[in-house]
Image 1 (cartoon, one colour):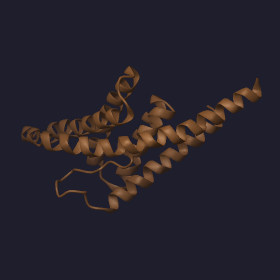
Image 2 (spheres, one colour):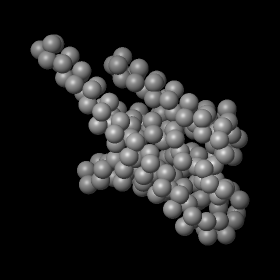
Image 3 (cartoon, helix red, strand yellow):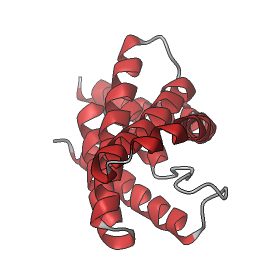
Image 4 (cartoon, one colour):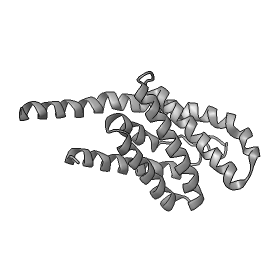
Length: 175
């Protein structure tokens, strides 16, 4: 793997951990239990668009494991992992179609993250009544996904293009 790519993965992993920590310091941005903005997903969406699925997947899962060990519980790891995996799969499929921009992909990722978490909670807690919480989580997912998606879109267009230009320059020098 190229050194530049490894460095970018490391920086995005560090950013994801920092954003997870910052988010853990503040109570949820609403009084609704379990609703968070998902700041660390900014690093995952950026990685998906600038590095690829495998790298984004590694960053996402490693962040879930480390954040749960440092700031959460084993149970929170199960919920987060289910949400992260479903979210990343949905985002990768939508990105691959080319029909959706970064904000729309992020919104779908946020909503699917919430659905993955509620699905696992229903299974673990054997509480089918949690399904009634889905509309609230969809609204929260749309709001947080839009914020993260718009921010990631700006970062991808500005930072992604800078790294692409530097790689193009490197390739031209080598030829």
